[in-house]
Image 1 (cartoon, one colour):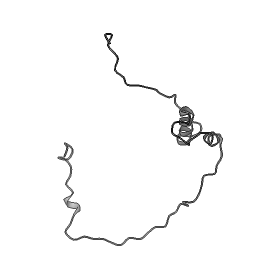
Image 2 (cartoon, rainbow, N blue to C red):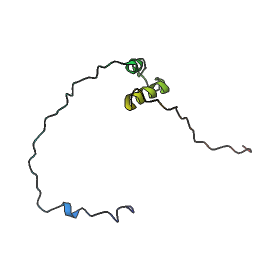
Image 3 (cartoon, one colour):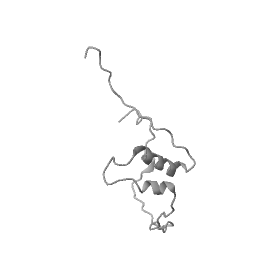
Image 4 (tube, rainbow, N blue to C red):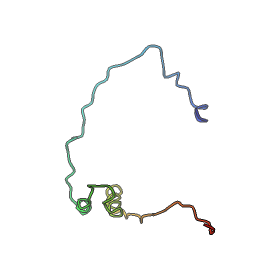
Amino acid sequence: MTQYDAPAVPLWRCMNNTPDHPAFSVKRCMVDLDAKNIAENIWQKKSQKFDFSKEDLADDAGFNEILWKAVKGLDSPCPAPVHAAFFMAADDDE
């Protein structure tokens, strides 16, 4: 239990002694699950050149740019990569 549990609204109003399992009707899937995206563009052609046979073989910057363009749009500029490390500075005596 945490501090957030104390002010939480109890769920006892959601429960009752008699279970009620109403029937439901199934809605058919409105999306073709076998459909493939066959559109070709420059980013799709670049992504085919990456080697995914083993981890860390693909170029990080190029792969990030392809993902960025796919999610944010072809006209959206990809931000510069940020490389950071957390380390403890050594004392001068060491």
